[in-house]
Length: 174
Ligand code: ZN
Image (cartoon, rainbow, N blue to C red; front, side, top):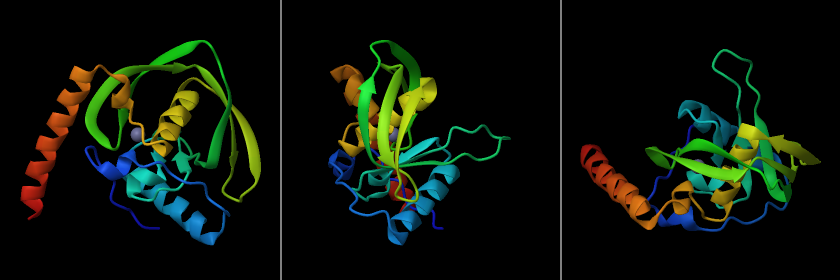
């Protein structure tokens, strides 16, 4: 397993739409292993393949707490079948939008169809934090970031801040 570099906003690659995976084979599984490793290292609770520069419809999620047994979830080609009318709000962050948080409202439950780690088709009814996390990660597959739900002013302030951080970071690397 390899820890990969996580792309951060503003990076035009993050705005790309991801394409379907044709077959869940060893190559895809190895990518999912890397994604999980990268997510645990960050640390974060969800990661989409596009965040490490691979425009494929794959997401990994693990909501287990620090001292709990790890509980990785893998979603290949996820599709939302149904969403609730009731919303839930969470203070969201994103590994591709470092150190920025905002309260975002999304449907409280969602039913998602996907292929698992072994390529088996599954249907899951997700609630609360898991439902929010799935929807956040699935947005990445469409090139959408949580800051897109904020006001224009707030969003541009965050992007400005991140651009500045990036410049400083690049200077150190060089
Ligand atoms: Zn994210």
